[in-house]
Length: 201
Image 1: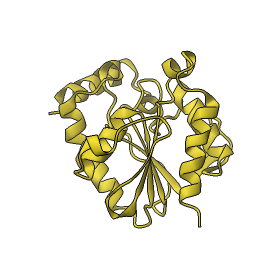
Image 2: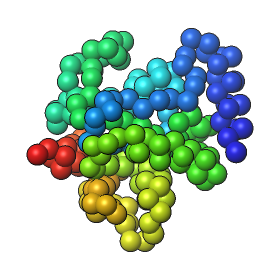
Image 3: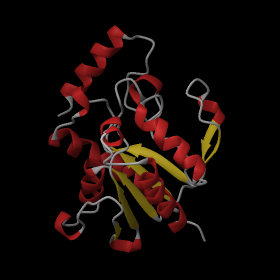
Image 4: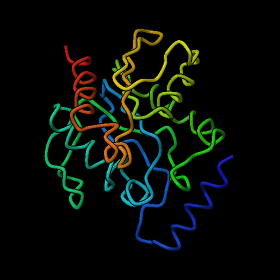
């Protein structure tokens, strides 16, 4: 099912042998109560660095926002990944390998859902999820086997999932969305802050 992604990774490994070029693992503590789910590794971001959102435009908004909202500590310096750690949250992606044009197919998203299922199951303290973009939102809903029409995606939406878990939605923090004004840093920060507040006693 994922032959296309594997071939794309191999091509990038030939072109850029010093890049990570692999299935990008989740980042954050296993005790996390908040799981942040993105779309897929960016070609020059996570696919290069091996950390979700690290080294690309979306990460330049995400990580400073996590620092501002208390979900990270340290310093966001792309050249020093060891300088930043996450607090009570983990970041993962609906698709673990970089897709061409940043557009995974439906089959690739479905194939990768087993890893999202496993990621959730391995977080014993999980209380909330933050979907960065519609693809992440839909993948989360499919993971819980609920009807998408009952949980419509919208920026700032907050849904109660089976078992009492909360799902927060935000537009993707991509360059396109921020450059067009569809998503401002203030809009993004409000949703992240709400998700952070939901897991604090």
